[in-house]
Amino acid sequence: MVYPRIEDHGIIGDLSTVALVCTNGTIDFLCLPEFDSPTCFASLLDDRKGGYFSLCPRGDDYTSRQMYLPDTNILVTRFLSEDSLVEVLDFMTISAEDAPQLVVRMAHVIRGEVDFDFECLPALNYARDNEEAKSGENFAEFVARDDDGLRFRLSWNLGNGAQVNTSSADGVKGKFELKKDAWAYLVFERSKEGEPPLDLSHDAMQQLFRTTRAYWQNWMSQSTYRGRWREMVSRSALALKLLTSRKYGSIIAAPTFGLPETIGGERNWDYRYTWLRDSSFTLYAFLRLGFVEESQMFMNWLKDRIAEADGQHGPLQVMYSIRGETKLDEYTLDEFSGYEGSKPVRVGNAAYSQLQLDIYGELMDAIYLATKYGDALPYARWKDCQDLVAYVGKNWRVPDEGIWEVRAGRKEYLHSRVMCWVAVDRAVRLSFKRSLPAPLQEWQTLRNEIYESVFTDFWNEDLQALVAYRGADYVDASALLMPLIRFISPSDPKWVATLKAIEKDLVEDARVYRYHEENREVDGLRGWEGSFTACSFWYAECLARCRQTEKAHDVFERILGYGNHLGLFAEELGPRGEHLGNFPQALTHLALISAAYYLDKDLSNDLGVWR
Image 1 (tube, rainbow, N blue to C red):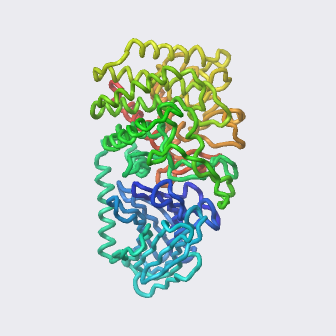
Image 2: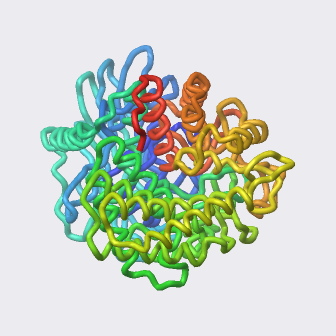
């Protein structure tokens, strides 16, 4: 088996987990029942042992195309040949909490008569559990021998004449034929022992389809965005929604783990967790588009994290599980060969124990915006905010691991220092806007002190730029956020000089790298990495805010051109424009939304008093 490209995938989900569906009709990544559960399909990380669920026309004389039904996360893979046209519709149902989780696959022939093949070969618990198949009429169950809690079921309605082999040691294989206008259905689910079989009649399955389509279209109808890039912004919003837990309100960074930033390298991380930074930015994107409920749910989730804080990592830590667990031990899956041999394949993320001071700025900014567009803060939550500011006041000079989660020791990072200023600034703004009690003189003095330190501690006279960390001799792309969060005027000479240094050292076409590749001491890891796509969208918005509108428009359109066929983006881009890293990445899509929103208003001369 040849590994498909990362970008050759669409995603489906049910707000509890996400599956990756390749253009060849194969589901090659799925964790059930939740985002961070063990895998049951993961051939994307090991083409021999990972497990997969394929459904496609027989033969190799087909070309395939993928699309989403408008304003939905229902994925359509179309197979075209001289004699036939076939659609495979993939989606997960959005059901009540106690209802079964269903991965629905529907085959429909539009033209011709078509022979289909399918294979459902689960590899449970990261391919570590041996499973046994138990078959019945039109269904088979896969039960892990090593864990009684793992039980999955494949059910099918394939019409007359279908041949299904349920005796295979690997899973279930089958073939069937459909004529024009005929339908076939396969459903994969997490099941319980003794649970009655699903109703897979044509009417029942079509009702599932209509209900799922209505859910997504109703959700998208809340969007207030009417700008130039409505299709791309809507797709980004739908992707971000898929990364949001309906049950907990938390938001994950990406639905995958182990997809490499360097093919064959060691930069392979698990992103199936809730980073406070990414979640805070995501709330900003949702609020801009008119989605308020997600903000309220995340704030409720965050309230519980603050109440449970043990002080080990400060009031809050960098990331949590979707349920709020604080310990995310990192280990390797030696069973997996890795995507194109990229090892080790890591599960868990040791960065949870890092100190990253910037999270307090991003968090306070999110709270400020949620309060601006929603309800006022309750008394207890405002007291929590005061505690956060007090912590920042005591620790803003402390070295940390920074936004890029380096594993080469702590430094005083520019981005962390700037975001400490944001934390205090937004608290001051909240106090004024909502008439909330606060030690304003103390906070304003602290804010001014942090502000002054940025220019005295991070300005490099020889380089004529604000540098990555105190004492550094190079720039970092995270500085592009400084005008976006209103720390510095876009026309400030020191910022203009810094932007020139970033463009000289880190920008290639529309692609932006995080830092110099030769500066290996930055992250302590071997190998190179691709350009960081979120930074490219920050760059486009930054140019627009610097009144370089034409250039900003050009950069934005260029980076959009690197998106996959569905408008989805992984974390990074390689030399050939290939997608690298976990897919799709929330940080990239929320940066796209932010840049599209600002640039559209800039082009329409409709900025007014911004933010």
